[in-house]
Image 1 (cartoon, rainbow over the protein chains, first blue to last red):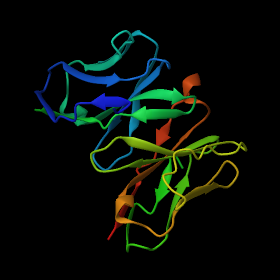
Image 2: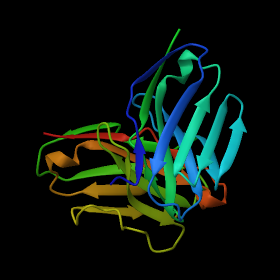
Image 3: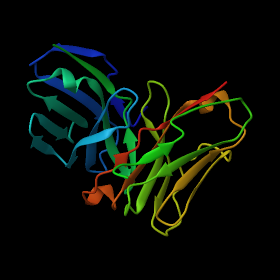
Image 4: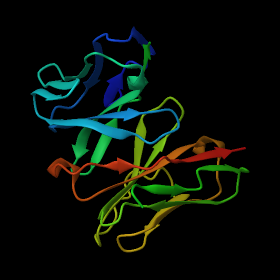
Length: 110
Length: 116
């Protein structure tokens, strides 16, 4: 069983749609989660991080953690073609080590 | 430089040869990571350096892999006797301190290694 599971997609949506990206994880002992965005042939860049449960909002992006169901989500409002990328979720499993999901590829069509 | 710099950006090598991959972290960043990303896969942790502490090598997949770091500066990842399964993107990242203290991990663009 992978520590962090993501649907690889691709997920294709029209511009302006609300996007929901999801991950499940297997161990709730740690509380630090991250979402990274990775454009083709580029390094990942941090979008958001969250601690424990609840929501965190930053502009068009909202990260949500549900520890009871071991589920983390990233919502993108008013999606733009520039949001087309692969989105990686990650969770801490040691102070400085993280399990990353394999990523969900998102395509936002103009 | 402004970001994490990695070289070479692309490397094609013959099976059995050794390769060295270089990483220049962001100036002042004490933490440095190496990750491997195979095609269509997530990032696999390889090794972590923090200041002058002993590195965490628990992610290195075999003794063919090694990494060094000069102080809080450049790091080199060496793969000896390369195998085809070593083909991947090798990503270096750095952060000012522990990410769980709110420090962002910044990634380089990676070194794309192909073993033929």
